[in-house]
Image 1 (cartoon, rainbow, N blue to C red):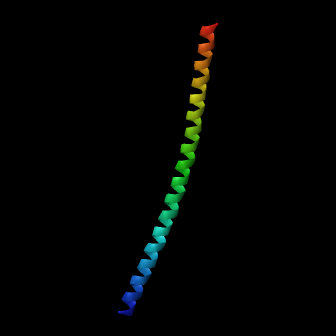
Image 2 (image 1 turned 120 degrees about the vertical axis):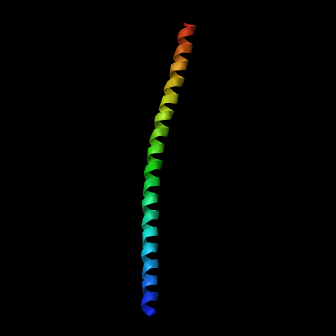
Length: 64
């Protein structure tokens, strides 16, 4: 009976370790995704800025 108890404890420790590892992996992946999202946002902001500048230039060109 003690051996079975020990095996159960060992199993739960192993599964806890695996869960902790999974959490670390997920955290790492989320971090990578956030970094990519931030880069994409910068790109979108640059595109919006470029569009805004182009719009102003068109407006100025029409005035002239």
